[in-house]
Image (tube, rainbow, N blue to C red):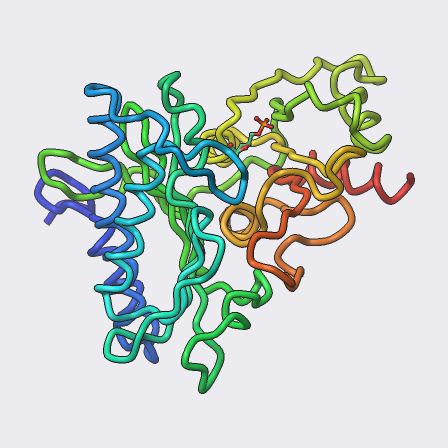
Length: 335
Ligand code: P6P
């Protein structure tokens, strides 16, 4: 028969997850079922995002989330879809959403052994402009003997068993890792299936793109401004880097994964730890970038080594190709 992913041998995310499960002898199938329920939510949300652009579903829902941003209807919808689908999977015990101040603890009967952290619609303030937005998620096993409590949501990033995002744009791209590499899938709307399109995504060692909101550079600490200056005015006369900043983390990270280079949202003089949230933005993206051969740091510490103390805490982020991120680390070390 023809190789995988030929027309008569479609490699889908469901099949890939099951192969993954069969490769891990101790797997019970629970993670496979959980990941399948996550991919289902992505299809729901993709539909709503697409419709929103058509029937102008977006619009203020009148409430605000932990960011203090106006919550758009799609945020509310996406959050409800995620909560309901994850609860229905029967595989979760604790859910942490960017849209909810407190965690959701799943009741007996529906409780499973995983904790899922997620931002159901990251970048949603850009929706009206047609910019790509996304769902970001991280998955932990709850600690041995736990029935699901806050500590399960405050584990080190390195304790995650899976992480990923779905980016909603011209096509719907799911990018996922279960700890042995990163794979990308594209939704075939006709089949309703995610088809493997980017097998074993690997970051280039060095890139030529930097992605920072330089509107904040007045507040950047010196190591960051020194790094940025070194790539905009290279001392060795080499070609300066190109600037690409979309302002939607999923889109900026997706481009960095595929093209290389560096994305940063630093802590600065105005906001000590920057803007990105550790549980459902920093950690999942750090796991993906590391699994693709890159580095994710606060500038002075590996992001995945951090043990959070509260579920909505922020973290400074520099992530991407080894070459660039190591330069940022050096500028911080020599500060
Ligand atoms: P700024 C979107 O609101 C978000 O949380 C991330 O998706 C994105 O990377 C960041 O904020 C953009 O923030 O301050 O550059 O607009």
